[in-house]
Length: 126
Image (cartoon, rainbow, N blue to C red):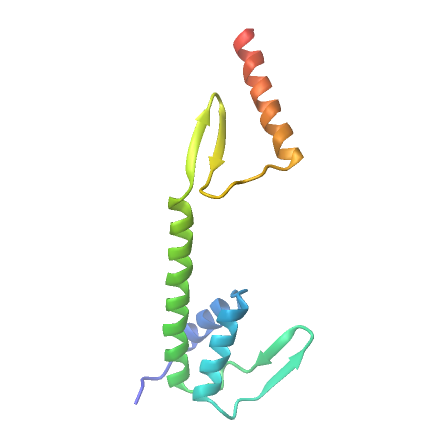
C-alpha cells in the first residue's frame, strides 16, 4: 500500500500539470489518471478538460509525480542540447547567435544590428 499523499504536494503537482503546454504530455497525464481512477469524472468544454484533482488515489499521485519528473528531465535535456548547439560569436560590440540551423533575421533585427554597429563606429571615430 502506498503512503498518503500530502496536500502541499498535491497542490504543487497540480500547478506543474497546469503549466504543461505540450499536448503529448497532457495526453500521457490523462492516461495515467484514468488508468488508476477509471471512474473519474471530468468536464469537457472549449477551454479543455477539467477534472477534480483532490479525489484521486494515492497511487495515482505517485505515478503522476514520477511522470512529471520524467517530463521535466526530458525538457531540461532538450534545453541543454539546444544550449550546447548554440555558439556565441562576438564581432566588435555586437553579439550574434549562430546555431547549427540557419537563422534568418527579421528586418527589425537587421536594422538593430546595423544601428548598433554604426553606434560603435561613431564612438570610435570621436
